[in-house]
Length: 251
Image (tube, rainbow, N blue to C red):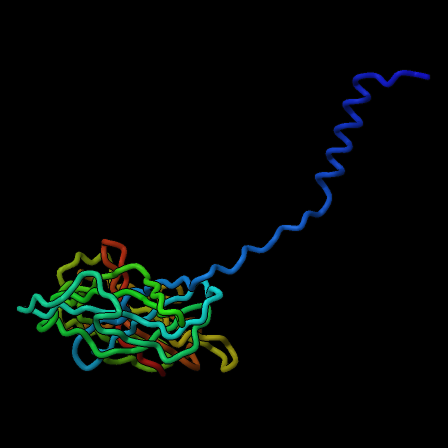
């Protein structure tokens, strides 16, 4: 009987390992955590005047296996001249419950505006109270009304080119602005998709002049001579990376 050479033995071992590594392996799914995982969403549209409505919300990232009694936001307001507030709000402070069944994704609602001449700071974070009494919190965020530019869109010229929107800036805020202007979404044909809440992920028309008080008209480039539907709202991008949006005008 011939002996198997060392080189041949190594080759057989390599082929065996290769065949084994090519087999399908079952990778178990990550088990659902015991408790819900929740995230605080930043305040959106914090503006003054006629459109002083503020969008707040939470994002549920994991549902968990424990039943949820209620969820939403806890909030503590530092009123100007009053030091009765906390930087770490809990359910013993003001709660803004969301009247929806908990499900994965964002849950938002609209609240009254935070006026800059009355409020110094707003501390807020997501919360979820479980059926067994346990409370889960998201990260704490702070909103300072005086920091934010008061901006709104007051007029959109129409749906035929050239299309323009007018922004009205009522206050400049205390945070350095990187850029500002209008974001917009449109559809040319009635069956085209469209976002009713445009962001920088859609289309933008950046102002070419430094931010200042008053009104200015900004042109919105669109294809062709007209669009069938259009949503427009102002935006401000700050040098610290934050972006805030104003009211929405739809046509």
